[in-house]
Image 1: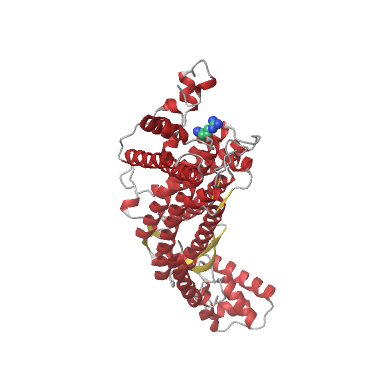
Image 2: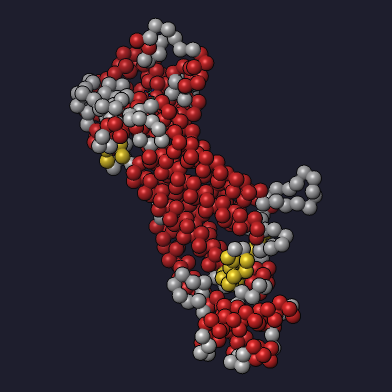
Length: 459
Ligand code: ARG
């Protein structure tokens, strides 16, 4: 008989059993479920709601069940629906009537809310660690490339020269915020819902704060209906994970472009590339493409969860069982993508010469030529027009700005002197941008050092 079978005379359709059962996926919360039950049983004993002896036997047996699950000795039963009832069924099988006392003052509704919060807390800790590792690798690449000049783009058109360090550190900033967002999500997940019961709490004198303390929660939910029926913390997690994937995906897109024959800024290591079954010459950046592709699936998890929650009245509804697969899928995806990405960038070869040569194309020092004229007293708009004419002349004559003779410069304005050549060197363009946030070696060195400290303190 089902644990809830008392008021039923017929049995559920076997296909229905399969349809509504969640054990095939929520079994991964066995540890959370059991530790939550151990804390609940300890509290029931402490409060005299069940006897000390019963409380202790329940706790001891639950721990044995946990060890048996971990040793692969337990098979779950679809008919017992979910992880909560599977564990309870096994408990009752082992200790009979005493086991039947565990669920006093508790509902699966607050139990599942507890389990998913515990699960998410642990996953956040793991994912934060993976982000930290990625940031350390990126900061290290930046440190080695403080003077590696690359083209900076807007509209994917050559714009102004920057350095590889400056470019990579932009992503370090993004991942700092991602890490922070996970900290925020953790705070709001770290609230203990047990004691909410099915929806209206319970008549037993539970000590909810004791349970929270046992399980390492900061505080307890303050309205039992909210405690069992919101999943906003899971949605927050999914949105934080979606943003991380968006950042990884943009970076992957750049790496794919950088790795192309036309760019050759980087070359992926063989370990992170694949070949073609037909074209013998091919070496494709599949890992980067796959991470870019998997971003869509994490967005899907977020959308699914938002949509599941949008129309359900308070309090618990079975729709909410759908929260788990979205959370699990997104977590699994991040836990694969982050380490693959980290190793992929850590091992890729950086072709500094190709980067530098590309930065010489496309008149990326044109702004600096105009700025030099401004320093000689020419109004910026006039300087802009003069350099525009020079660029046109260069295009017609297939030259770069640094290849023009002084006479050619003077044809446009006699303000020009041979100081212009130093002013438009790519190194000058980069290193005179000493403003905080800019690409100069002077500033980027400081930022790299600052990042080292921040990263080493990150948990
Ligand atoms: N498996 C369910 C879930 O994941 C547990 C809660 C079920 N509660 C209920 N009243 N049917 O949401």
